[in-house]
Length: 99
Image (cartoon, rainbow, N blue to C red; front, side):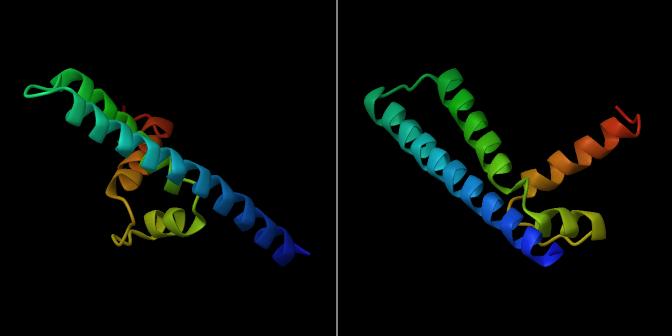
């Protein structure tokens, strides 16, 4: 029973990640359209906001992955996205009163 439950949870996580990766693709397309349509001088503030949101979406896509959490807990540096490690580290610091 626990193995089946774990497999079902992984399926839910996989579907959630697929949805978030589609949002990442849409955000990348949006950034390229803003840069292409803004002429010679794109608004740097707007581009920065879009890139920050893209970073957020990428972190959210990998944050629920149990392998990423395992890697962070064990100090393994091979992470799919370094921002995920920073997110976990910030969360740990906030919980333990370091920030």
